[in-house]
Image (cartoon, rainbow, N blue to C red; front, side, top):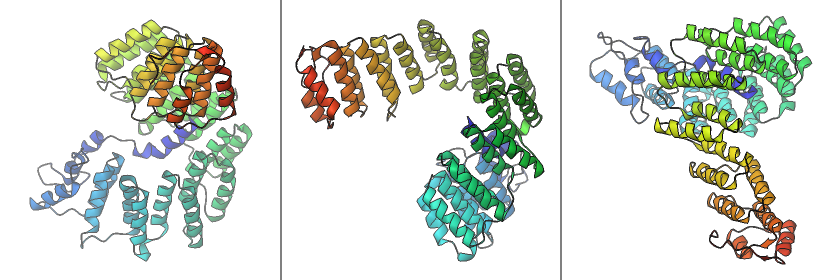
Length: 508
């Protein structure tokens, strides 16, 4: 949750929709006199395959006013806000080819950032290397540093920071904030204090620095350190934002400091506005974690008064809150409301209610609910089938959990092995001496490309518990290119003295 809060804070300034941008009318570009603007045309392209360059050239061919640099910069900003990075990059590239448009370092910094997002890190590095020396300054270096952080290239990021320090480019907190974010995401929290010390030697921390620092305190579960950071923030006379208080509230709740949590929640709500819409969902979650059902309902009512329509993420958050507060009837009612107003058929929202049924051991209700949502056009995903797998594993229903596990793996192109699920499944099979199930599970895992020494050992333990010897196991191990360890040899030797288990119809 803390990492989500960090990412949310960094993204909050970009939280606008394309539709909202279009409604601003003529702001993003030159006007053709009929209400048409270049900005409108570019923002209406929507599909990445359509070309922004063609749209600009057509605009000029129609005799429209030639777009000015400040107007194109505004369009690029709006496209980035709408995550239309490919079209934003095309506009930047078009600008770079115009002799009458003089670009500054900040323009190249944005251009580099877009290249990293659209074409990858190698292309961004090549772009940086090809820049004139006078354009490889603080802004473009910081943009490249951001690309390294986003791509988790820690060595390159540290090397660039060292070079920026030599060149005197560390005069603002942004590069340091990038590095602190990198260390947090990599779990290298011990490097953060030194980075903050270096920051203070060259410049002053901003609110993002302090919020990241607070997140480190929260990850280390250090309430006293967080309070010291908060005191330092207040001494610096910075405007504390909702993320500051959200992070503190999380930490207080975790340490059962409910009075302090209540106080920081009030401060957080004071800083939650229409412009920081995502903060409302955080308020819902925090009140839920404190068990404040009345407050959760009050915040939801406040959200409905502030915004014309709730989005899927907000419905998902509120339904999850009601489920956690054991208000299952309320969750079902809200889900039905979502069905009537959304139209997206987002399976993530359905999965919240499905999980609540499964957690209550209402497997028949869960299956009926799943059939209903499919009939209404919702497409189940891996998580849907995984929920059923865990539900039937809990009931130790081998036939059912293997059926749903197969469906789960079949629903994705490449399966990310879930070691806990696999071990739990084999443990149930071993308890029941269920060699047919063990064979089926081995086939499922082999087809998913996940067969190794540990899997074979778990498989052989099931046979050992059943007092049976598996057929042609040596050939299968060889075919699967699995290395045998001491445990494998022990289990093979043990089962070789047992009678043969006849499950040849399952073998593959």
